[in-house]
Image 1 (cartoon, one colour):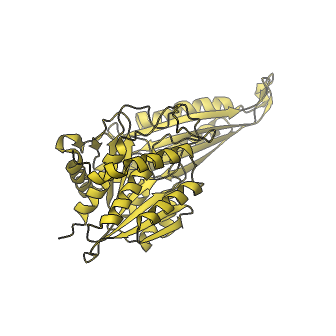
Image 2: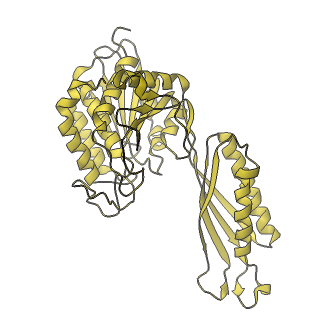
Image 3: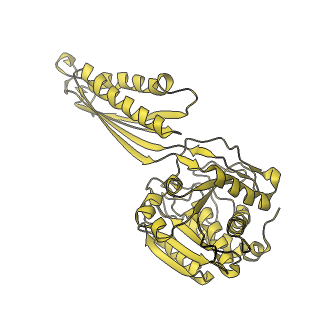
Length: 390
C-alpha cells in the first residue's frame, strides 16, 4: 500500500468537498456551482492557469512541472454532473435538490482529481505539463465531445489522456482495467409507425400500427440473435411504446424508443443498417409507413493497449501487484471518455468503491475511503509518465 502521506493531511478537507458536491448535484451542462467550486479550489491550490467555460461549463487547470524540458503534456479527466434520480441514501450529506443526485460517483471523481491537482501544484515533481480536465454532461450530454470541439486538445495538445471511474463492489484499494473495447457505444432509436386510424369496431377500414409494432419487435430481436456473430457483444432493447388514447379507437400512429449497444463500430453500423430495412419493409408489408431515427450518442470506449499497461503500472505502485488486474470484462454501459480516447492515446481505469449499491441506483453513494487511493494513483501516474530525470 502506497497511499501518500499528503493525502492524510488533506483528507478531511477533501471529504468535506466531496460531500458538499454530493449535497448540491447539478445535471448535464448546468454545473455552474460545481464548476465554480472546482475553479476556486484550483486557484487556491496555485495551479498556473485556470480556464473556465470550456465546452460550455468545463474547467481546465494547467500545472507545469519543475522542468518542462521534456515538452510532454498529459491530460487527467474527471466528470462533474449528476443524474435525475431521487436520492434514497438517508445520509447527512444527501442531495438537497429534489429529483437530482450523484448516483454515479462523479462527485468522488472530481474530488480525487482536485486532491491530486493540489498536490501536483504544490510539489511540481515532474518534467512536463499536466492538464486537469473537469468535464460536464457525461450523463447523456456528450460533454467530452463538447470540450474537444471547443478546442481542448488543440489548445492543450496532450500526448496521453487518462480517466478513472469508481466500481461498486470491487474492494477499496483495488484497480482494474483492460486493453481494447471496455465500454459500449450508446445509441438511441426512435421508431414511428404511421397507419390509418379509425373505429375499433371496423378494423378493416384501418391500418392498425399495433400489429406492425408486434411484428417489428419480434424481428428486431432477431438482429443480434441471427445476424451478429455470437462472439461480438451487442444489445438491442426496445424500452417504450406509445399509441392511442381510447379503448375503442385504432390509433393512427405509434412510437417506440430504445437503445443499441455494441463493442465494435462495424457491428454498430450493421445493426443500424439492418434495423432501417426492417422498419421500412415490415411497415410497408402491412400498408403502413415506418420511420427510424437512429441517434449515435457515444462511440465505443477503446483503451489503448500501451496506455493500459502504463496506467496499471502506476496503480501497482499504489496498491500492489495483487490488487491490480488488466483483464476486466467489458460492459455495454457507455462512457463519453470514448471521445477523448478517439483523439488522444490513453486509458480508463476502474477503482474499487467497496460494497455499495450499483451505479445509477437511488441508494448509491461514493465511498470516501476511496479518495486517498484515487489521489495517490493520479499523482503516481504523473510522476511515472513525466519523470523528472528522464
